[in-house]
Image 1 (cartoon, helix red, strand yellow):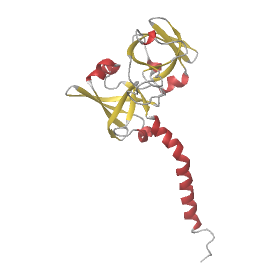
Image 2 (image 1 turned 90 degrees about the horizontal axis):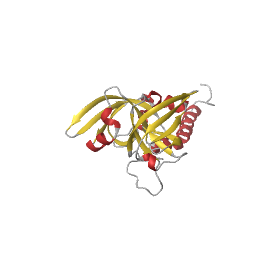
Image 3 (image 1 turned 180 degrees about the vertical axis):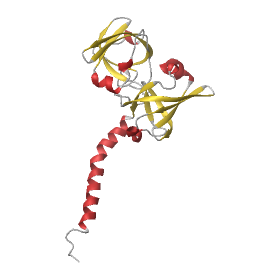
Image 4 (image 1 turned 30 degrees about the vertical axis):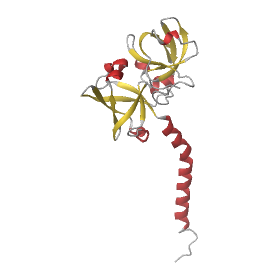
Length: 218
């Protein structure tokens, strides 16, 4: 579990394809001081497991499912990425509850200057629209943000100068692809209530049909 507060910007050092997966080695100075083998770490929002490490770098292995759903398969040596170690119980939750499980890839539509901040419009697959709530939380490339506006299957976030500087957002351009994770609370509520809504709908349909079943022929 993560919070969406980036600790460091790392740099892709090497990529090694292994069957359908990819071993990714990242240069980093801060998180490597505390990481251990088997620890979880977020790479642009995707939770990965450390399989090797030294004082200045660590390696993870991204499997096929991760590569399908995220931008990790498009990483190249030299790319800068957002890094966050898994949170500890008792830590302050500076962002929101982030699993590190990418739901889909979004695409930057526009980047607008507004005073000192930036406004980003990002489009996403329409089937995920129900999870995007104005003033609700969303995770973009591992960064916890608040949805400012929503229009159909795109949304806007406002980025403060500090976040713009301390994350890889300053490298985004129109057309850039980003990892999106929607708020887990909404997904749990949907999963828990869906059977009851389906049951209620089934009863309503049955009640409607019963008005006409077993009626004497006129």
